[in-house]
Image (cartoon, rainbow, N blue to C red; front, side, top):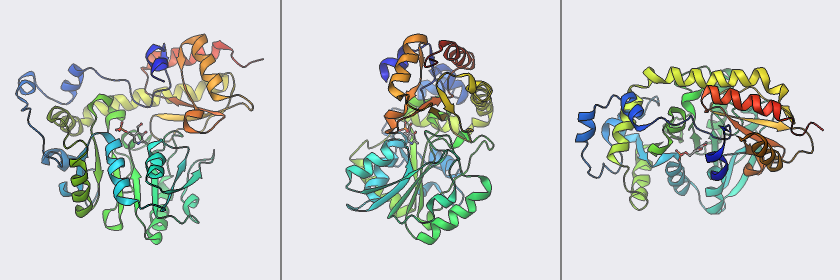
Length: 353
Ligand SMILES: Cc1ncc(COP(=O)(O)O)c(C=O)c1O
């Protein structure tokens, strides 16, 4: 994947918004040259700075800084949460296909996996109605399909999960790119043991910052914090200061990101029927990626290889998600490159005969 993505002419396989430079990020975060030079290079507090946790807590109704643990990316938050939530033999239910860590870590911990196949029509509360598990993992907006629960269906989902009386982990990594609501939706409700993991790095074009978080009740956060002591201990004070600035000032730059991303979505919606070998596209509801179905008989790796060789356009084969017959397409590329990539893809005429 590294080889392809770094040498592509249009990177449509990426799951993040294209990266800003450090200079751009400092200006977006409102950090002056003078302040930048004064950032103390100490060990940040193990739980994360109070100011950053306070800003993160504002994203989750009914939470306070005590409910937040700052982590090295959402990945670390997931790793910690799964270790504390899963006992060997536990059943873990999740949507499949999925971001790999959502089932690989439970599997490593000896969990019994209960994948729920996403349907081409989307995701809905009904999918969970008859499922009985020890832990429910809900990635929303969903990677790789770009699906969300309909607004009217969310209360029903929450109600249904409550009746199960088991912990739920909402991985809301793409929350800031909900198509209709800039702050996105959260299913986190700590009193019900509905915990959350999240970040903004993919949505804000700063994946190199490696900042994420876990939101849970205070005693759970304390246990996760102790565990984190033996993993990464703290995040860098540089990353933490930038993260704070970006969260505080997101209203100034997020609309532009959203307009570029959803502009790319609109371009695809207009042209996807002209893409050779593509059978169907489901409307993107949130996040940065979508899941395109290939025409019957086409293998995803062969398709992605051929497309890349003919045009330099990079897309991700569904096989990477253990699901044949699909490719994942990202909307985070610069608009001009995205459009050029789609145009070249159309002209490539692969799989037409
Ligand atoms: C759904 C989901 N959760 C978590 C992660 C991991 O995020 P991070 O890069 O912040 O560790 C990703 C990364 O792509 C993701 O797609």
